[in-house]
Image (cartoon, rainbow, N blue to C red; front, side, top):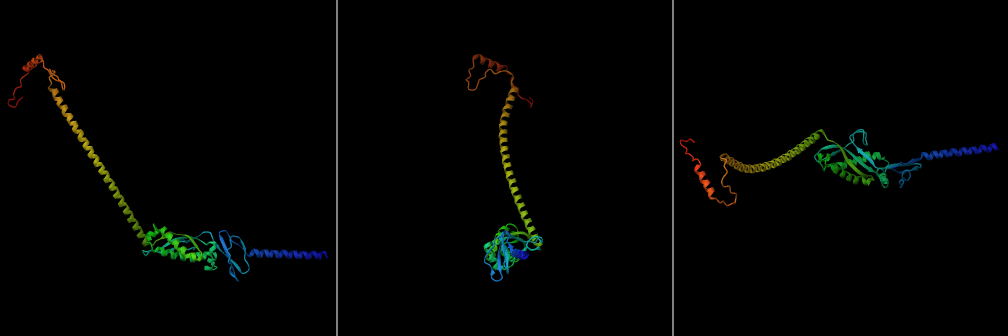
Length: 312
């Protein structure tokens, strides 16, 4: 009896353990993990989409049910000509037509996300399509339409250069209006690398060269104006220097004439001091003795002979 009871208990124990293992395996096989930065919704074959959004955690998926994940963190959709990058591993740029009838390929980068409150709207719009499929088809088509709508407002030269940022902002606003009803939030769209045709590249090069030549002409004109101003200043300085030199020469000429007169007077001086040496402003009184001496000197002074026959 004891052996029979032991065998019965053992059978039940083994059965319970097996059932527990099977149950645990079934639960694990029907458990889905929602990773960080994502949310999930469950579609039931009988009831349709369940009206609940699940945050990151482990969720048991019932029979005939399936979970769909959507990223809530920022996503970057890149449509580029580089075959080793972007959403499609092939040349996938956006062809944009500008108002000068130039069809030019641009790399376009779009940053977007799906907010948790918009997940059910996205599912109702796109069904069970994964976000990667939505990104490579629906979002790309919207980007192409928005870029071409904005591109016709600019010529290619402006779109490649000074107006690129402005055009990118307009494309961002256009995409927000287009994709908001589908539950996709656009944060930013940006025009990146441009790939103009060879013909238009030649036009761009010619235009750049013309611009450079214009700038060189402006610089030359500015240099000529500066040189003219320098010449004017130099001329005025030379005139002032000439006037100052003339004034100094005039003063020096008067002094030289005085010196020459003094030198000639010295040459004629016989060494005798004058009997009368008055000072400026002084009254002169001649005594009888002095008068007699003056008369004697005049009588003894040689009489100059007249010049005859042109000889001295």
